[in-house]
Amino acid sequence: MLLLIKSNLVQKINDDHNIRNMNQADCYDEDNNGVVVMVEPYSQKEQVQQVVLRILDANLDRTREGLRIIEEWCRFGLNNSDLTRECKHLRQEVGLWHTAELRAARNTSGDAGTELSHPQEEQRESVKSVLQANFCRVQEALRVIEEYGKLYSSGMGKAFKQIRYRVYTLETNLMGFTRYQQLLRSRLYLVTSSKENLLETVEAALKGGLTLVQYRQKTASDTVRLEEARRLCQLCHAYDALFLVNDRIDLALAVDADGVHLGQEDMPISLARDLLGPHKLIGRSTTNADEMQRAITEGADYVGVGPIYETPTKEGKSAVGLQYINYAAKNCPIPWFAIGGIDPNNLNDVVEVGAKRVAVVRSIMEAEQPTLVTQYFLSQLHRPQTVDNKFKLYEQS
Image (cartoon, rainbow, N blue to C red):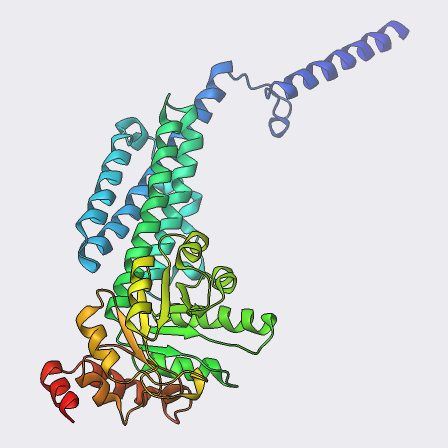
């Protein structure tokens, strides 16, 4: 009897030892009442390789789809052959890696991710949000391919690292080009002033067709400025409008504004460009021909021309008059905005001596109906002009 007990104990110890060894080798299935399922050593490696193929296939699809969405806007929205060509070249290079072996690994019906979604994916606020979402999608997919590609093919990781950098450059160039095209199309420029219902007033103007806003706040704390600038930036982008910050480059960077506007006593444009990057907008205030030419030489994207009339927002600066508008119309190769005391009563005088774009503060910020005032300004700024004849009459008077 003692020998039988000893024999059973030894057998149990051996069984436990074998089970531990099989668990470590993934060969013991507790759900199968201890029946050992033998797996050949190389089959697990094949399963992992199949998963890698599926990951690469899915992310190559994402990359090509995202690039095509971006390409369509470059082609039809911007009519830009260079940007369109770069998108096409990137798609073709990615496509060369999308082999039949990778496509064969696809298992759409068994993909748990096909049912996943997020509310932000269900709608887009603007073309800009569509572009940004797809750039993010492409860049994330490229990073996935770069890492998993190292397990699949020699050189795939390195190739997709370089493609990812090219997509970063494409994004920078495209967003910069888009900003400048928006600037060229903008006729009315709202410069804000301190106001209790600031956001409501700006949104009312945006509803009237405004496409360019500058946040100007000289007295509030940085905490207030940061919050107002952040909310205004989001609001403007929701309406496909540009948002710039007066003077404060740090604030513009903090809220990802489209650029800054600098006065004559602010930092050099070259330094501002270094801080903001090559594709943000930089404007400069000018009061005479010399200041204008210097701003153009330094690389300003646009200039302010004024103050045309005396205005309390430019204390201590005398009005430069309508002659400066006529000079700008004949000599300024970059976008320029007449500014200073312009309102619905004198707008036509400004337009008829050459102004195609104007910037205003009080006319909209203090208006009872900002939407209607904005619409009036835009209607007058888009009507046909007879500059030369009007200015000759002005000079004779």
